[in-house]
Length: 331
View 1 (cartoon, rainbow, N blue to C red):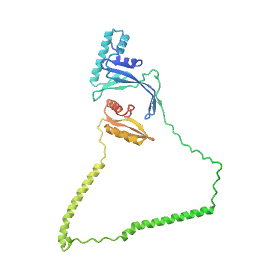
View 2 (view 1 turned 45 degrees about the vertical axis):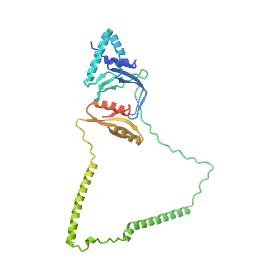
View 3 (view 1 turned 90 degrees about the vertical axis):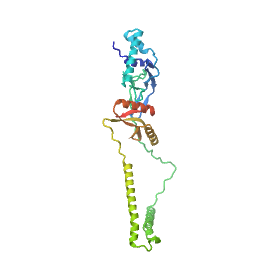
View 4 (view 1 turned 90 degrees about the horizontal axis):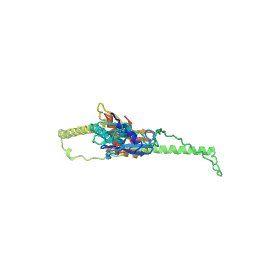
């Protein structure tokens, strides 16, 4: 007789806070309030989220009782059927397979040989069951300038006559012109006058050049010039190699067959918070990802993958390190 014991777990979670698989662990339901997803622009209703606790391995009798009621089996036969089912689940997990529990989630072992559980996201809270996810969009409001009201009791300023206004404008123009001429003359003397008036200092003639034949002087100066040329060429080679190293910013070529994905960790409006999260992502060994969205900045993790199991493992690790609200954004 074929029994779908995995589907019974989903039915029991609507009425119980925990359902045990004897010898393996227990599925626990915990209340979660409404959540606002700023990245996706969604408002999720409250509900019960499911997690797996590998430490609660004792039999609570719920699955065994349901097997007895559904198939009319004795208690010993129902317990033996449940024991065989748990044994098959353990063998599948030991072979690095992903065990799927319908409407509950998936159970597997990660690269550190730890049990990991990915819930399906079903709502097991009877009171909030059926509430949909609501999409929201920010409302842009334009600022309206308030009209200035005239205060009573204050007299209006007397109008300035046309002649006085013209005289004021002429005086201002003359002052600006004079200031421009003074600044131009000062700049001219600073740039050209200093070079013409500066006297060249007289350098004393070195005694080594006195009574030296032209041939000896040329041979004496030839050797240091060659050494200077060699040193200059070495300096140029070093500087060119340094420039080549400093400008070499090419990213490593991705391995064929790999694809990339992005996990958003948070959205911030403060640049200091963005920089702090980027440093934390670097310290955790991940490559950060940023994207501008208006006045906000999305910050997350980007990586390459070969299978979906790597994505799921990365999501759990990011949630464990940073925030449980981290979500897959792009792949």
